[in-house]
Length: 314
Ligand SMILES: Nc1nc2c([nH]c(=O)n2[C@@H]2O[C@H](COP(=O)(O)OP(=O)(O)OP(=O)(O)O)[C@@H](O)[C@H]2O)c(=O)[nH]1
Ligand SMILES: [Mg+2]
Image (cartoon, rainbow, N blue to C red):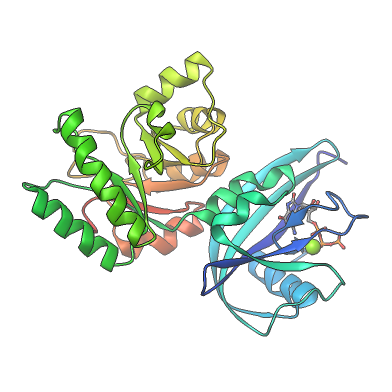
């Protein structure tokens, strides 16, 4: 019985003002008394999207208008194996209410971590907090150029930025990073820095993006992060993605999916392998390398959180 996988469609329903809808699981159900993303089991012959639409009609009285795949999570509870197929719902008709008497609540995206969910939900909460585009900064000749390009990226709506400038000395990098963090915060964006994990203790630092070497060293020491800031890692395989999850990363990049100008000699994974690797991961995965915005839809269908890129937005 426990070997059977229960396929579930669940929804991260977003309202324009950056709120997400949660529902309370009834006490008498599996994982009762915990908050959930509304949804339910697929019935025979149904697609995930059909199940999602039916469940949201039955449980909340709304019609799904706009949606896209967000993340797929396999989880083994002691009494049940589930495959949670989670979609982001960005458009719906009707005003949601608890049709089955359950409590429902709109929650600010940044406060999602304050709620208690079933154990399978940690990666879903991580995915719901993240956008689908992750800008990695590229070359700049002057400080003026750096900030001009950063402002342009903000104007394009980019909300997650990694400051990558491997040619800078540490002091110069940190001085620019602190100013960039202020600029990003003003537009509601998050800045990820390259550097030591001890930087996570600094008030002004929102997140750290580790190299694969740093990841390996931290993993071999048994180090683990439990804080609320964003920790990410550059991964190139399923093993590295498993390490990233084990040390407490909230997301990762997977590269190179295709050939890139910045790493022309790295062997690219290709879409099929990238999909298989992403499917095994238990954290959100941004695909990186040789893709354009046109690929975003396909990345999501293949299980990715979205796309990371230098060249598209820099
Ligand atoms: N809907 C939903 N289910 C979740 C979440 N997290 C999670 O582990 N689950 C598990 O996935 C399964 C979903 O089942 P469900 O109880 O919602 O199914 P349903 O709406 O079809 O209701 P039913 O129990 O009346 O058939 C449960 O075992 C539940 O514990 C979540 O965020 N949302
Ligand atoms: Mg349900």
